[in-house]
Image (cartoon, rainbow, N blue to C red; front, side, top):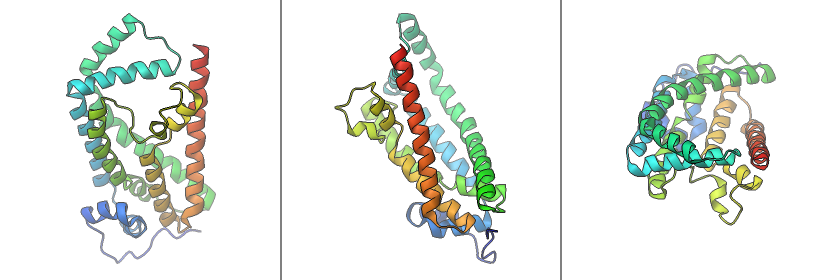
Length: 243
């Protein structure tokens, strides 16, 4: 049986202390997070920052053109041909994307957090014989927010000057000599430095919650991440060849 409640008499950390703590001393911070299991503030922060960042970028001509270019690139990467009619439709959709995308983020962000929390709770309670509560798991997942906030603050200005919505920190950007639609580019494109950081922070939170070592949990999460990236890359290669 795992120990999921520790030091209940200790005072909770402030919001700012938890935000900076996740970035610089995640294990110590998660000890407080698991103890007091608050999650609403951090989830609200990451969701609002993501939505406002997208709204700000798409409100510019550069951002709208980047949205069009990304839509075309995505369709072509999955083996679809973008003719004049399809391009015109994409241009028309981009006019309302500045409103639709931020609203979608406000809805999808929390929903994905709830889903991830539920899946992790079921898997880890079953595999580790744990007795963690859903609220504790939500707190662990929500407190990866500082990584997401830093990611937005870094990528949005960079993407504005790049004129692109693709991640400037995925591994494919370090190999511009590779063929754009190759399997290797698809695989490297699915691996992002900020997402690696996010997974590692999540692993620390889970290790604190279940009173286990971080390494095996991190290995399990990174293997899962790698499998997902591999499947996506294989699927893209399959559809591209079939085009």
